[in-house]
Amino acid sequence: NFQSKEIKTKLDAVYGNSSPSMTTVRYWFNEFKHGCSSVFDKERPGRPADVVIEEIVEKVHDMILADRRTKVHEVAEAVGVSYGMAFNILHDNLGTKTLSTQWVPRSGQCTGSLLRSRHSQIGRIALRIAAASTILSGFSPL
Image 1 (tube, one colour):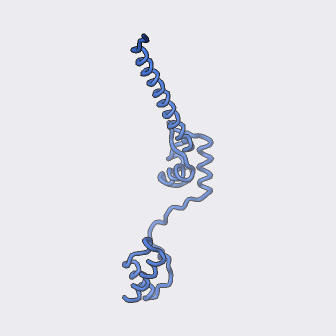
Image 2: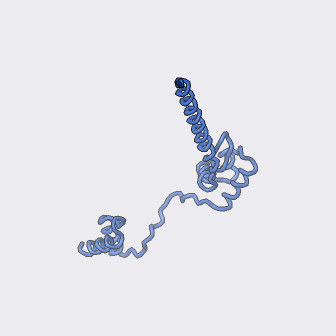
Image 3: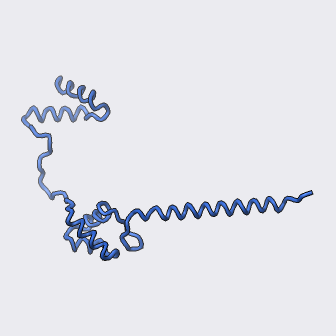
């Protein structure tokens, strides 16, 4: 296919390393050649993908604010979604995580690292003081 090679060359010039492969270009070329005029995928049979609706997210948010010990399966049953969907809403949409069986905002993660950092700094200072006193105790002036 001379024309698909031309198209591939032009795509490479515009998109560089991000351009589609020659196989993809040939596929597209043949699809358009046989009458396909849409660049979107056709609707497929099967279960539709779950859509996160803002109303559901708000209900879940209100439930968590009312009781932070709410379990994922309770959230799922209350709003009528699957367990996985309820977990994704809590984790991805609301940005929460479980901490001691409570849902808390993820911003609380940094406090633990700050405490560990300060604790290790105090430990290093105490070690330096101990080392300095050992060195000084072995020193005897003339």
